Image (tube, rainbow, N blue to C red):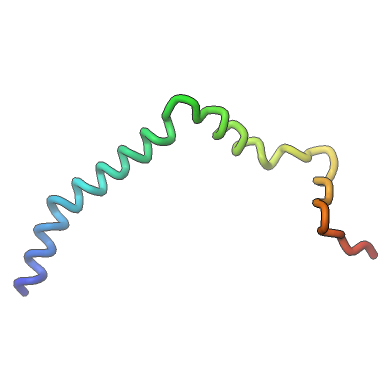
Length: 65
């Protein structure tokens, strides 16, 4: 029971602080200046080939029946 109490105290204090710092770091990384173009490009992936199928890549022939 001693180990459980020690791990519980660690999780309630330092682990919580570390996870909160990680969360804030991820938010800051996403909102950093210059990342707008990257996120805008990623958001447009489903709409790139809206009118016609994507062209076949070189070396990947599609089987046509």
